[in-house]
Amino acid sequence: MEIQIRLFAALKDRIGREVISVQIPDGASVADLLRAVVEAYPSLQSYLPSMIVAVNHEFAFPEDILQPEDEVALFPPVSGGEEDLERPEIVAITAEPINLGDLVRSVITPQTGAVVLFTGVVRGEEEDRWVKFLEYEAYRPMAEAKMRQVLIEIRERWPLVHGLALVQRIGRIEVGEITVAVAASSAHRQDGIFEAARYGIHRLKEIVPIWKKEIGSHGEVWIEGDYHPSPTDILGSSYVQRR
Image (cartoon, rainbow, N blue to C red; front, side):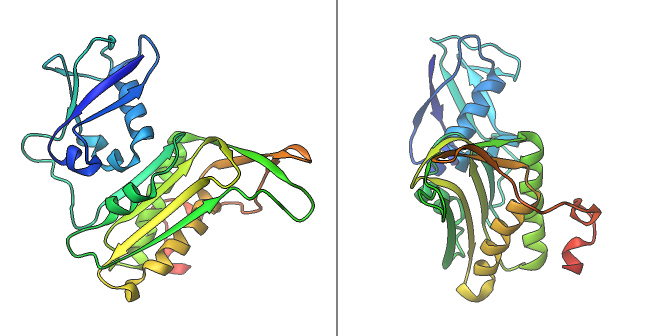
């Protein structure tokens, strides 16, 4: 079923629209709705911990079941719970195409003067084969936690970075489509944003449990890396200082 959702305050400003819509299965809960919203609109990820849901003009909770005719609204807390506008952070795993314009806007702060954006795309040709499309799979709860760890590591190394975003697509992705995006903003280009974006994609490939399957002239093959995590890759270790 399709659910229309009204947005208010900072959520409306972030998306640039007052009403959005998402598709969810019949009998889906508010928790299912929020997951669908973040998948479709990754720039709302940073609001998720404090986001309030109202259904038919009353507060709603994760276990509540939605009906097709429900009027749904999302908004931030009326007081308190304010987003850190100086250091926004976006982490998202989504089956939807990545909107690069929205992603760049999500990391811009009033002090931002430079943004670096890295994107990965599906190659159609390798040295000995052609690729029809890729399928990405993630161990989602752990992947999201490790993506947040990458942001923590970046901030340890480049404290002048303002906004940060890591977004990874899953599911079927066609040749030429974007698979992953890393964005970093700062006041000036020399504040470490180039290095932060490079580090972000490098660490994502090392410690975030996401896999891809190539489908093409060679059949179907899972592409595996060769990095094996060690205790120094656990959040809270001294990895950042020693690297």
